[in-house]
Length: 211
Image 1 (cartoon, rainbow, N blue to C red):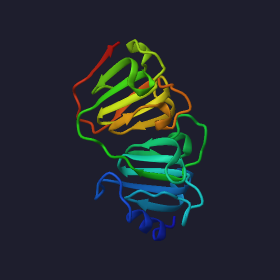
Image 2: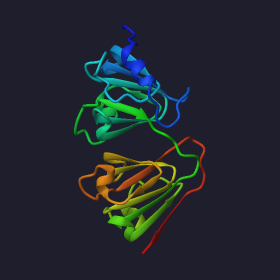
Image 3: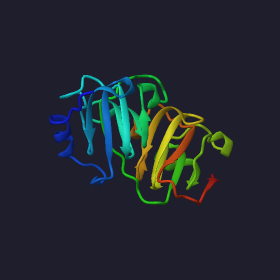
């Protein structure tokens, strides 16, 4: 297996997102099962097929996490890549809508604490659900509906899913405010499960509903 570096890696190394150093490393392969040409990255890359690779067939994340995208320039469906092996496209895609992955960037982890506010209406209106240092595989199970129209990521980095059980399209929420579902590139205000993107040492947990 030929190891490929050069133009693509150098271009990626010239840009950074979320503080890099030795904390981020991913190996992208052209073919499934870690075969064919490969490229090692430690910084964002807006176009993985611009130079060495014709496509992305498999991925190894040595350190991360990373956020990958269906299209170039960090657009389209999102895929969270945490440390581990992804031998083919359906290992990183929860929706199975597309096998395309054309750009990726490091995903910044915003400290040890996690707090997320979900709202049923745009601009933080309607019923509210607060999630504190917990993963929620079903919003329904906690008494909240599947309509989520705006979000405040108060602390931490989160990923939401279209369906229960962390299935369907993924939407990443880094710390900040999202006043409308189109701000996280959703076509409708449907979110049914959420989880933290984090290190392994967390303890506090809780979910709270309010009107």
